[in-house]
Image 1 (cartoon, rainbow, N blue to C red):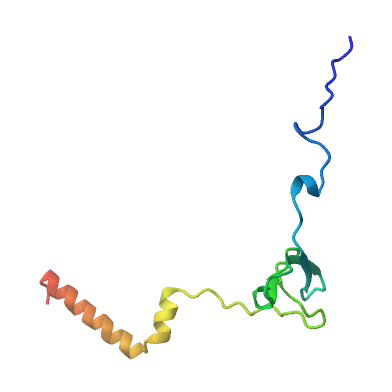
Image 2 (image 1 turned 90 degrees about the horizontal axis):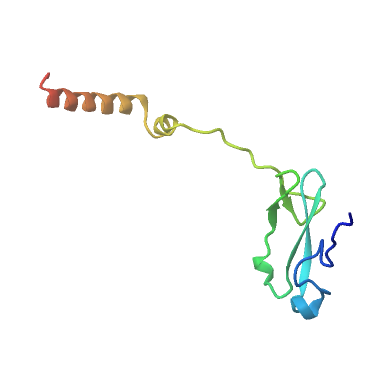
Length: 118
């Protein structure tokens, strides 16, 4: 038995020669290289008419997740991550122990008044 073949097997319907006549004219672009602290280079492409101030100075490196900058000899360093602070930690930064005790006493007094146990 001979298997039936298809002349278009493995190709898109409507496919044909591709080129600028089919896809339009490509916009002018510039390539910018970024380096991370491990020496990895990442290239990003931007429109050639994009103002310089809109091109980022630092990006996240896709290979390492580290910040990457344009200066190969001085890549940006990783910012020190502060540990997660709880709500209580933030409150303790704003209040002294004496203020906390006073606020607690006032809150307990109001609670006891509401319950009628003063």
